[in-house]
Image 1 (cartoon, rainbow, N blue to C red):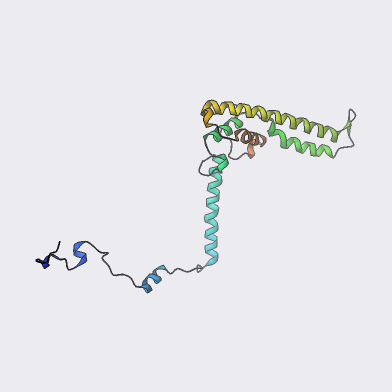
Image 2: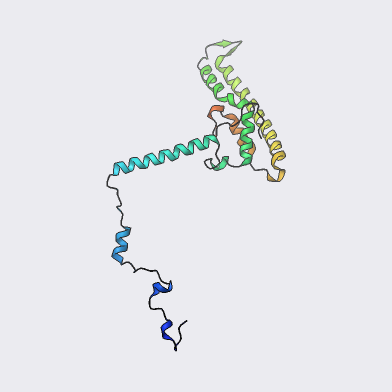
Length: 194
């Protein structure tokens, strides 16, 4: 520290004392020149093509991650250990709802055959009756699935940790054809979920 009696101890250069920034302040012109970038690239088509390729690669990585069940790429409704358990439980069992789409296609074809009669009923009427009977079976299967899911999740994760909407989540997954489900099934049929 400098005193009035000893003026030689005052450092003459800031660089010697280790303080200061060690270089001159750039002028405004130099700063603007350093920040100057073109708003539009020289070759707009090449830049757009490179941007499309980058976006497509990112989208493909997200699609593969989602199909594999990677938590980072899953939508919010599919995240968490309870949702994964429900997905595995639904994928491991046979669900009546999986047959809904093929049956509906058959019923649509049957409605065009209203001139063909089988035991007093037209084929179209039989198709509609079978469709309603199948829908009732799907509702019963969904109710049973909801009951089983809630019981298994309570056993595995505890009653106080039970998430809302797991039964509905399971029912909607059970209605989809197995190859069309996203994330893709991670367990075989009959395999017990962990």
